[in-house]
Image (cartoon, rainbow, N blue to C red; front, side, top):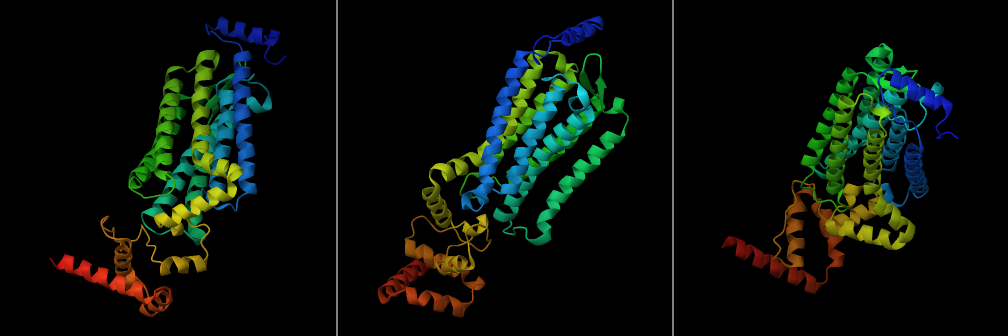
Length: 382
């Protein structure tokens, strides 16, 4: 069988010994790792398919389904690249033995760089919405993705064009790919630049009042990818014959795939599981929470023009607006409404405000509102 110690595999081990290289043959430990992570990725594929089937479900739509699909595909390419880099399969033939395809394009361009760029893009979009109150519309929303594509095309093309000894080279006798140390340095430098941008976005978003823990997701993701990058960089520098050691190749694949898959499930598990098991109940809770937090406009889903008008009429203020006022917790509910109304008044049409609010207030409401507003003014004057 494929993972048995075949005569060809014995010959490979003997060839390595001739050059003083100890090779742990590809065996059932590698098979177990391939089966485990293939199963995890198949579950992820099913979840991604389910996500697209229910793409109009508001809690899923708010997570940016195309972007999350890209992050899932990153983990697939990352895993394919790891199969060759770590030697979990026999690295031979036109596919696995193509070191440039597997390591430069799959593992690095569509793997590491894709994950870093898509996470940075996601954080930048959240920054635009929650901190700047300027979500990207029209053709401008494609600019970050075009920059990402330009990065991988330029770096990948240059890495492919240079001589093999300057990038990745296949050693046929012992069947593994050798990665040039200068290439490792160049790639990790680019990755750290991407992570620096991501760190900056996480820092800028540290105080946002989001309804669904985006900051916690980003902070956890940042920690995981920093650990993964440091681990990769350390191993590639200190263990140049990584595929020959069963212990190190299994460790590297485990760290890579735990990081890649955990980040995706960290973001998508709650909305997916609730869509599956508590579809309508969770949707109601989700909308109520956004309405209570005053953040429906920021999430940009499930908000029609009529609903937006209704939100303006009920004076649900925008947390990202510089004109919003944080009410004192001791104020009554109607006083908070008064404060929000006064703060929002310059931005609203006076005639529209009065005509839309008037039918909803009876005489007692109006009297109570005026009394509390007068009391508030009296307390402020002292």
